[in-house]
Amino acid sequence: MRCLLTLFFILNSFLAISQEKQFTFVFLNNKPDKKVLPKEEAEAIQKDHMANIERLAKEGKLIAAGPFDGGGGIFIFNTTSVDETKEWLSTDPGVRAERWNIEILSYTPRIGSVCAVGEPYEMVTYALVRFNALITKATAGTFPDIFRRHLDYVKSLATTGNVVSYGSFGSYDGGVLIMKGEVQQEVIENDPGVEAGLMDVSIKKLWIAKGSFCEK
Image (cartoon, rainbow, N blue to C red; front, side, top):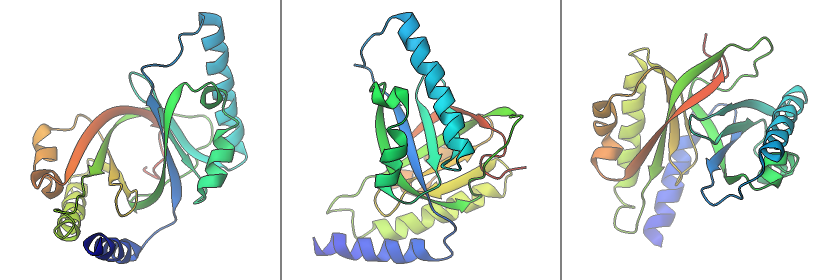
């Protein structure tokens, strides 16, 4: 327990340096056991889901949103409050119908940021690389150094021009890297966190309005 508490304070101090504006990141994860709905009902929920996204965006609550290839997607909300995020999510017909498994995470951009994009939207595809931290009592002592090396590695990737954005989810929840094009396997395998076995990785194709991560 003492090791984990020490890790918590070290990582929080590290992440606090030069922090930019914070947001709340929501994963709408595929739900394999979701109820099978009649086509008309599913289409009506999707239509209302899109209308709700537009309304939340106009109200300045939802900064960015986009679907994954194969289902699910992300929301990025203009708040740091979990309760406020849950309140805004509760207006979504798809969330109310339990069409996804929901994850709510604090989000601090480290490279790039999150920007509201106005119409007309130009939809683009990026690779969303999610790093999940694997922290146990045995690995707690080495994780702060590995995490620093992971961040340095991501910053080095940014010099290639393929990185759109990177942000962290907090001390224990990893982060997300947004990249252009296909992600080469060796790029992931060479990450110090992955090499050390302290991070696992998932990669999904994300559709999102160009400029959502403040990119040109």
